[in-house]
Image (cartoon, rainbow over all chains, first blue to last red; front, side, top):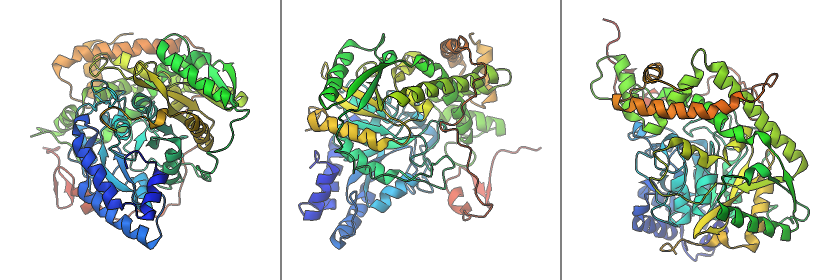
Length: 483
Length: 95
């Protein structure tokens, strides 16, 4: 049951092979068996069983949708009414969200069953899930290694079959990087495609929610539910939503793939490079054509990102002040002490580092030198992508420089940790959609292939990923002990 | 460019962010490392480049000036650290 696709499960639910209550119970049991992974922060067993019962009624009545009765999980960054929404932080350890994120509402109306809330790096700031207040998530493929981050709980849960599918969010690679390190499929949509309402903000001009699944076929179904204009999100884009499953089987004959030479140079692990080469060869067999391209500004993505994202983070996180919700320090002596200590005790070290960096970059005398300069660099990076995508249909490359690294290996060196997002960050700065697709293994650890497309070309990306998944079986492989 | 312990304390004060005395040196080191990374940006000529604030250069959408939200005061205050008579309580500000 755990290895079935959404479409297969939907069929099983309709034919009476199993009920949603049975399916949900099976997943809840599995979650209990594998608590050592630390993938979930909160398991909502009672709510899940209620939702499953309601789904079974809908299924009997015949008014079910594809996701009705399917057990899934939400990254703990999405507000869920009446359920703790911690964002991986002590600051929100006591926060029971008073409303639902739009994405959560959409899954609820589709009749999906929420199993619980998934672990993540604190406020989505991290690339290893080690900054979570609730402790690191373990990678199901190698228990001493990180699952990636920030959506590490989502990626580990899908890889270990502790949910059929899950939501993630991606500000600098937080869907794609953990998807790559855990051998699952992850899609970061175009900025504005999925509502950010009720998704706790980190860097508002970069944050975007998206699906994390085993296959592109499942991701198409999830995105269909997630995508769409939302008047409650002022940056939501009002454009029609295509049928994401309709074009999955289109031929890739003549597809023009651009390979930026900057993606395959120094810094990319040789085993990862060899695995990606094999994956790209599969695309040649499917009729695609390869062009080498150059994107000279890509190397500036990390410095620009670590100005822009912390600047936006320092503004967004100023709302956590110990007054209206969240953590408040004990016995504050005055208002300044209340603010300073609540924030000092409520936030972890990485979050503080980024608040400090952002505050500095926005402070008088440095604003032009850092923030405005970074925004100009952002334009150059975006221009690079626009120029490239005028010549090729999609860009391919690595998601990560290496496979999953050890827990504790990089946490003491923040700069080294930041460099693990070197291939993903530029895409957020440009606002483009991109996927991570399981492309094989290097020394028994999963490797992801990144596919980057033009604005609002999610349907094309899903088609390209799905065609690869028709001729490979990397996405169906299960880590040992989780079969 | 590197930051001193005093710089870090000043930034922390601007952010109203408590940091432990024993951590100041490590923040100074980490932030200096981040700033070193950023010096690469200085080498690029960006005269005449328009700063990019939004991925699609969209302006914020405006909506009609109408009341769309209900009054949820009680619900929102039920999760507040300290409230009384519909007001959020903080330590005394005016003597």
